[in-house]
Length: 530
Image (cartoon, rainbow, N blue to C red; front, side):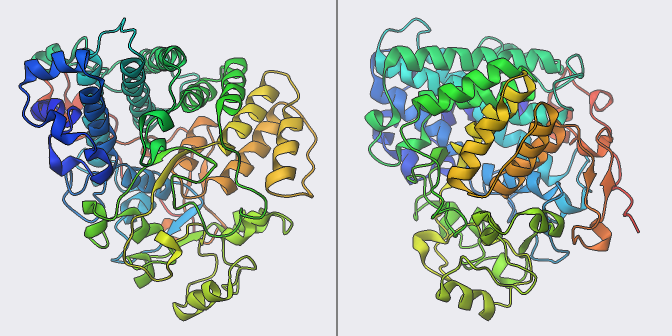
C-alpha cells in the first residue's frame, strides 16, 4: 500500500481519469490545472473545487482494472460479490466463467489472493483520498457546502474501515484487543508513508469509525444541506444525514451497542425522505437505479463508464440474470435451497428466486420466456432487473446499492429487542406492511435477533451484507443441504481462521512496520462435508 501512496492525493482531487466515471467528472475542469498548494487553498476558499475532490472519492467505488487487471476487477461491487461468494446463501458454480470461484471455494486466504488485493486496495485508495480531502478543508469551517463535503469524506472513510475491520479480523464483541488493520488518517499519513504502521486493534479501528460518523452527523446537521441540494444528477451517490445515521447504526449493531444502534436506525428513518419498496414492487426484478425511493446511498454508474464499455467486466455481468454477461453463459448465481424453502409462500420476495421448476410467479410473461430460453437452473436469483429494464441488454450500467432504508427497520427491531425492548412490534409492522401481510412473530431478545437475521438473508441477498452478518452473529458457515456443489459443501466453524483474509503481500513488502509474521494465518480450503 505504501508504494502507491502518491496516487491517492490525485485520486482525491478527481484528476486521475482512470479512476473516475462520468458522474464523478462533474467539476473536473475546476481542478485540472491547479498545483497541490493551490488545490489545498482552493478547497478552503472554493466549495466547487471541494466538490471535485469528493466526486473523485466516490469515483473509486467503480474503478476498472486497477488492481488485478482481471475480469473480477471492477471496484467495490467486486468486493461485495467476493464477500457474498464466501457465505452460505449465494451459490456460484464450478465453471471457468465464474471469476468469483475462489470465494465460493474459500481458497483465497493467502496474501496474494485476488480478493484481498481488491478489498485492501480499493478501501485504502478511498481512505487516502478521504484523508487528503479532510486535511484540505478547515475542521472548523462554517461554510455549509464545505461542512457537507467534509462530512462526505469522514463518512466514506468510516465505511471503508468498517469493511476492512470485518474482513481482516473477527467481529468486535470479544475481539476488541485483537490486531485489525492499519489506522491511517490525515494526521499520520505522511508518517505512515515514511515509516509504515503496524496493525491497530479492533477497538482502535471502531473508535475511529464512530468518531468519523459522529463528526459526519454533526457536520451534515450543521450544514442543513441534502445531496439533492448539492447534486443534480444522481444525488444519492453522496451521503445524506439519514445515511450517516444509518452507517453509525450499522457500526453500533456490530459493536453490540444496542440502544445506540436502535436510536440511530430510528433517526435514519426519521430523516429519510423516501420510503421502503412497496409490497407490490418487492419480489419483482428491480434494484437497478439509485433514484429508487428506498435507496439511501449507492454507486452511480453511467453508460459511458469503463466498467460498462468493457461489456462484461462489471457487476451485472456476474449478478444479472436478465442481461448479457458471465451469468448468461453459465455462471448463474443460485440460492441456498434451504433458504428458499424457508421463505413463506405469502412473502412476495419468494419471487426473487426461481422455484424447483425454474419458474417465478412474479415474473412477466416476457421475463419468464427469457428464463426459459436461457434454461436457467432452479433456484437462480432473479432479483435484479437489467439496465433500463431491457431484457438481454449488453449495456450493463446498473447502479449498485450500498444502503437501503429497509436495513434500518431490521436494525431497529434487532437492537431494540436485544436492549430489552419490543423489537417484535417493529419487525411485525415492517414485514406485514412491505413484504408479507401474513407475517406474525412473537418473542424477544435473541429470538428477534434470529428472525431479523432470516429476514436480512432474504432482503439483502446479493447486496454484500450476508457474510458480514454471519461474522457479526458468530455463526458457523454451514452450507450443507443447501444445494452447493459437493466440492464447496462446507461446514466451517465461526472461529475458523479460514474466515479471515490475509493482508496482501504488497503491504508486507511496502510497510516497514509490518511483516508476514504479523499477518493472519494463510490456510488451505476447508474439507468438504461428504
